[in-house]
Length: 148
Length: 227
Length: 139
Image (tube, chains in turn red, purple, blue):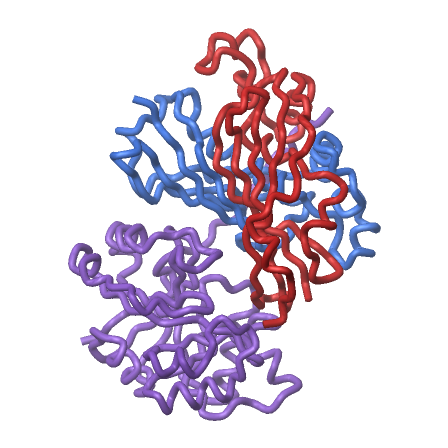
């Protein structure tokens, strides 16, 4: 097996980020960028009357929270280029304006495979998003792919 | 009596698949008219599910379920049918650099058949490897029809078959429930077990079958306005 | 149009297909909105220097597009997507029409959930991004 890393990193939390505030403006800008026009995400008055009692972010807003700049000091790299190979997200509490989101991350799995573009190593990082109430907002399994 | 099998599929046991076996079988039952498939072969990536016993599901849905593997070699990916304990001791199925010629010959010696899959695919298909390495010996069949192929890939595989006289099989390579059975192989003989499948693969009496619907032209869409 | 309910959902039901033109401007807007203003998502020339065919769509944006397909299907029914899994198989190049579609593949009485396959297809019919989602229906 070509993949060389310290097995002790699997499961070990390497980062808990500082809380990132969520503004109504950030949600609105995000919605514009993805073409989301559903009133529950963009219209405060309509959202108030809707099922969630106020503006909520679209579910995909959850994956926009990122780790810090020292990410690759903790997460092994196996090649020159890195690509986002996919995400598995479990959604918990809704994200609302005024929330503050923290990420807690660990390396979940590392494996090798071959494909159209050659040999690849996949590193799966599990991040749990928590809000200011301590509620689970999302579990995100992020697959990073490097070509070796 | 013919048997039509989807020879190449991945359940959620393969890390990049999201398809429970039961959902696959339910989908095939639902789509029986458009995809008249008698059975599926689970060809999980880089592993063989020794313990998996699917007789209850077979009985429930009336669809045959056989187990096999997709391994990775120095000539690309290979489907291994008729996997035995001896084979899994002889080769580490998780190794992505297995020696292809040894896999083909040893699997045959141990009573199975190794079939290179998606040969027209870059890097992990035979065609590209044959451009700079000697062709493999003792190849019985290759997968000419693969549901995950991009434009030109299956055509390259067909050219390989013409050049080398390999027999041709088909499979969906599905990683999603709704894609099961879109491509398959119709065998002239009856298949009920992995041993039957190995026997039939050696016979050469089969052909790939394509159940994919015709693609409709894609209409032009209006860009989303962005401030 | 009537809202989807747990009772009304059938295995085999479709989501979409929806045709969607993804412009470079929209990709840049997403990159700016989410702090991903890097060459591969904003500039063709710079992306080619990285060995890419041109600027590409961030994976997160593809996820957002597929998530919206599911949200649109949910409508105002009060149901919620509780899980979304995605695999990015090929770069999604902007300034092309994408087709989004999905199929309901499973229902679970115990959980009141529906599972679905979803994917993004190119003009040539290649599945660029594939995934599955789980939607929960309240009582």
